[in-house]
Amino acid sequence: MHPSRADRFCESVIREMTRLAISYRAVNLAQGFPDFPCPDELKMAACEAIHDDINQYAITWGSQGLRSALAKRVFQYNHLDYNPDTGITVTCGSTEAMMATMLALIVPGDRVIVPEPFYENYGPDTLISGADPCFVPLGEDFSIDEEAWKEAFSEKTRAIVLNTPNNPTGKVYTIRELRFIADLCIDYDVIAVTDEIYEHILYDGRTHTSIGSLDGMTDRTVTIGSFSKTYSVTGWRVGYALADEALTGKIRKIHDFLTVGAPAPLQEACIAALGLPETYYMELASLYDRKRKILFSGLREAGFRCSLPEGAYYIFTDISDFHMADREFAEYLVKEIGVAAVPGSSFFTNGGEDRLRFTFSKKDETLVEACRRLKKITG
Image 1 (spheres, one colour):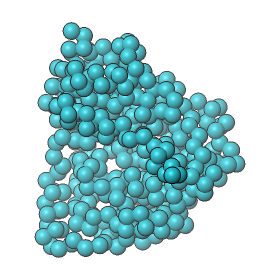
Image 2 (tube, rainbow, N blue to C red):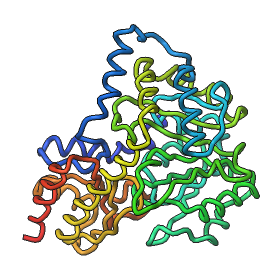
Image 3 (cartoon, one colour):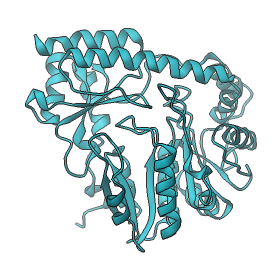
């Protein structure tokens, strides 16, 4: 029997750690979903849509109302100008948006650059699409080595996958870094596929820049977003891909046959999400700022080496001082300490055994309890 394409991949380590946490009743700081409720406005809007019988297929690439609301929002916040009829595709989460984009734009054998460490889906995404992945490591401080990046680009390069704010590192790419990457994309005719689902979760005065808003990048960028993180609805699976008409036409063809469309009543609720006041986003960032400081303090007190993230809601820790590899240490934490984290090697092609990722997308009391348990490491 021939091995299937699925045989090339391991199980998601993140989801595996969630199952382990459930088995041992550990505090789950592995998978990045909130344990607190989404805004009441969204729940009411979803219920109203169901009661109003918006329960059949929406337009394949998203309801007209949602695409129009998205066009207005991304113009205001991201400085991206897209026609809702030709430049926006609503998908089943950002995961499908990424996969549809890769399948639509990649010819088997094309090179795709992926900065490392990376969200664990990106590696399989490149392989499923038939790409030849080229992993370019970030520095110890998650900075860009410009010479290494220049060497990674070639005539064979079709796309680069970016993620800012970044999972797992919390890095927020600066305008200077994005301009450097944009210039390489222009020089080598490369498409930037940029995952920006944590765009509103920023700290210490940092701001978000979409690479697609930079000069020369409008027609060579696919900007991927989602309602999951900003509005605490990870289970709704509503995301989107923004691109010019030519790229969107290709993405929509793949999207149509992958999933047909995202849930119709939840699309209506997402329109309500986009109508929330600007104070909502300020309060969201403030909420997560408080949570990152709670977890950061607890991790440092327990002996972890780490820095405060610039964005997103993860802390990427150095576990060298514990003298255990990441998988062994992660299992020890779940079974003996009662806290689940993600082994760092799941974010690397090679390496990461000296890292663990913790999420702070939890109630304050959940984080306080996790920190209390982590104190047991040092006695």
